[in-house]
Length: 419
Ligand code: GLU
Image (cartoon, rainbow, N blue to C red):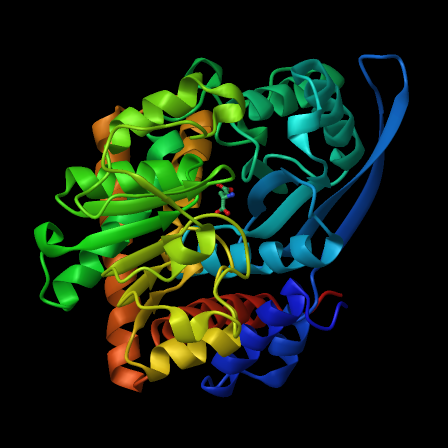
């Protein structure tokens, strides 16, 4: 285990919640170990005829509460340590919102900007074939994550279907609507971030209209969060992507920026201008004096190195693992709120669950039904976490983790140890 790796950070969060729970140590020991870790080599024929071997992983942390569930990311920084942490966070995420899944995650170490679409497609198909022995609609159901989307899910679903000889709709979630995807799934993580932010603002006696927001990351999570929060009346003063950060104290034209990205190479904001915008660095964005900061990019963005400069009153974690435990202690000590990833960004997996249910039943809901059910789950889950935090005088992450770990440990205890 990498000493300062992301998995160490996930274990630190588990230990912190465990200290406050009356859970038998044996179950915690079980939960410190992912159930299954698979590393695969994926040889791919590149467009120029050469062969390149990519490394991928799929980790199943826990199936105590149901089939494992979690996304697949394509990123140069993917490691087994990271995928293990992300799979553990999926276990807690599914438990805190009470959907009947365990946690998993997958990833391939690859810079997708250097590959053509056919190369990415061949890589996805080869990786799918390699992890096929351990995935399945009742075993482990992948979904999109960083740099993967409905197109990627379509390739995975087709690969499994071809190898199996029949169409398997419930093998992945986050599929295109024409392939049995769910209405509202693409926006679900950002919509969940929006609901969580509104619930927090209510508790702080603040309205959306008097709230300023900065969003780090303008991918599926960041862009939709910014858009929906703006539609609720918040002022989005800054957003960023790999091309840098864009700042306007009077508010940014988010829908225009989303349209711009759709048409630009690699879907970046590079070159966007609409007057009144100044360019700032990603570091400056994180340190802006705003009411709410939504880190919606990668892990470890708020660390001991920059935490003293963070001026946002609240942090709503759109990404998984953006705040290190040591940094979080300092934020909480200053009276700031951190809505933890396992709650803040759980909207995606909640609607993944709705999609899976629809795929199994081959009966599809209208978008309003999806969004209403998501809103209900988010409001109830936020209230559970907030109320426990008040009752036990702990921060929101410890409260969310206490609820989640307790549920998973109870499931383990009720099942007992095999054989
Ligand atoms: N990748 C998303 C997450 O981190 C969604 C997972 C899913 O829908 O299974 O929560």
